[in-house]
Amino acid sequence: MADESITLGGGCFWCLEAVFQRMQGVRTVVSGYMGGDAPNPTYKQICTGTTGHAEVVQVTFDPAVADLDAILDVFFTIHDPTTPNRQGNDVGTQYRSAIFTHSAEQEAAARAAVERLEKSGQYRDPIVTEIAPATTFYQAEDYHQDYFNNNGRQPYCVYVVAPKVEKFLTKHAERANVR
Image (tube, rainbow, N blue to C red; front, top):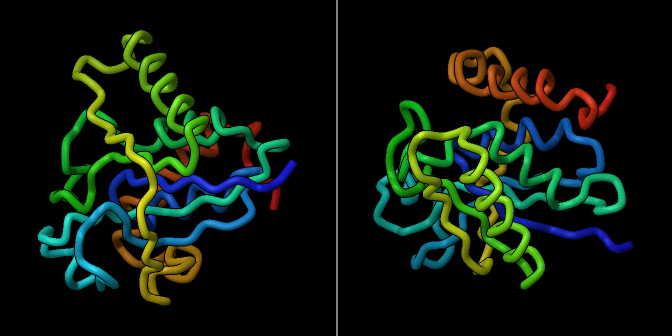
C-alpha cells in the first residue's frame, strides 16, 4: 500500500507538527501554508491574515499503520474544531480549522468524521472545520520545520504545544511512537 498525504490546519502548525511527528505510521510532517491567493507567501504575510492561507501541516503516512480515520481522530482531539479563525489566543483566518483533501476518498472520510463528531455530542457548538480540495502547498520557512523538537523550552512551546503533545500521548497512547 502506497503512502498517502493529507493537509491539515488546526491553529499554529507547530502544534500539529509536534503531535503528528509522534504518531505511528506517520512518515513526514511538513509545516506550510495552503488555501490562499498569494503565490509563495511568507510567514510575515500569513500573519497579516490578508493572504487567505491557513497554517497547515502536510502529513504523509502509511495507511497500513495509521489509516485516515486515525489521522482525523487525532486531528480532532488536539484542536477545537468549533472556533472559527481561532485556536486559543491565536486569532485570524490563518488559524482556522481545515482539512485539505488530496482525493475524493479523503473528502468522504473527512465529511464522515465531522458527521460522527457532530453526532457524538462532544461539542455544544457546531463544527466549523473547512473541508476543501488541496491547492498549492507552500512549505514554510526552514526555522518553522521541526519547531517544537528544536525549541521545546520556548514559552509558546511550553504553554501551548507541549500540552497538546501530552493530550495526544494520553488519549492516543496506542498510536504513539515509542522513542
